[in-house]
Length: 551
Ligand code: G6Q
Image (cartoon, rainbow, N blue to C red; front, side, top):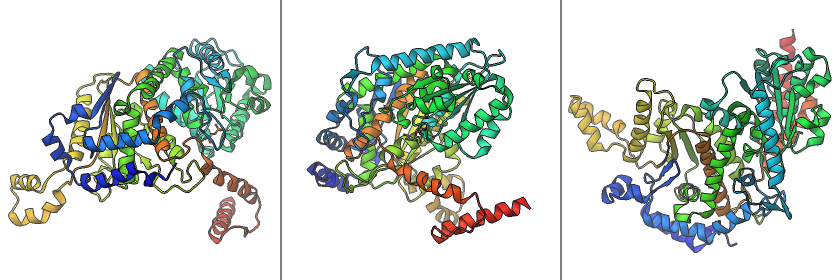
């Protein structure tokens, strides 16, 4: 493939950008009363409104042509049909098979992967039901009251996000806890209030070699054995989710408690597998399967909808429009649903680990910008914190605003106040406040002409800040499944157009390797000189601080 930036369509987009980028969305709305209808798509209970973006029909036509010319449709089929598109690891990318509810086979190397997936799902159902109905008993005969899922990165962020998102569907009398940080405080704080007799650990590690997870798992086992004093009891309290069954049984986990995952599921795309076991225990397998159903329906939409009506494709193209033409560096994810509070952290990993790449599929340095810095938090708290920069700073920060139409409890006027903020922010980002409007406001406040002139520049909002709004009815398991799949596919389309492999993560390795070299150096009192001056200085000061603390 010739370099992306040399494609005629790319150059056409550059030219279009030169004329279109200065257009004001205010004017675009004023001149086209049908703009909202033109630039919004409804999928099931989700409305995707992208009309408050700096686009025209011509922009979208050119971007769709870019998707066509980079063969997005062909790549979608390659992914769904098990081609080894993760070429640096020679692996297929089949997280979509985990939520395939069509009854059709998914072939990989001449074998249908569905029977294995279904058998794990049946085992998940059995285990979740046994725990939820209190039939699963610990070594003293007591039922399980607390689940501790130990994992990190892709083996943690997905279930953490989904369990929180589906809180209204969760069983009330089970505590679900997550431990990911190797900092001892995380496991200490988590285990302190728990009782070994009533705690079940799920060790989630695809490789079962990740240091952080194994250190935490060993500490959990020690803590448990201090009370149980009996290795046989482990079978009632330890479960593993892994592709490395051998290592998990060596650790002491009973083979019948090991849930398989596969090398064709990337960690950050794995919440649909047994990696989501803690979520399934919390909400029950029926709800978990509804989440799979929602994702499957989004998969079908992605696979079959024409590009110009295809939500993940449109999201991806808008991201490229800002990232590569407006040269933005960041993208904000701003949920207004309290239960989606971990969504920005989840998407930060999925997006940045997938598209934070600089080498293309041919092994060459890319000649264009790739994945943006994803950041965000609950929109309502963001409004009182970093929205200032988005409204009046010098950087353009495109954003997704995600909000539910329903309220769970109907307490007072909480929900309408929340939603008035959603609509007000998207409007404010788009319209801003002109000099004329700011002046009229100050005059209305009765300020003197002199005071008005001094304050005026600070009171102007330039506006023209792009947002897409994702409005959904209620955060059901099905809607959550669709939302997450929508973002996964957006990331995939961007990776296709940028000509990078979104499914490897070699960049995670270097720090891990160096940590292994440094670990033995921390265990003695010798002065370290083998690194650069800063690293030596830090290690030696650390040792000195430790010695001081021991005095
Ligand atoms: C995700 C990444 C990474 C991974 C963790 C945990 O896509 O590969 O975040 O999930 O490093 O790995 P294990 O599951 O093998 O412990």
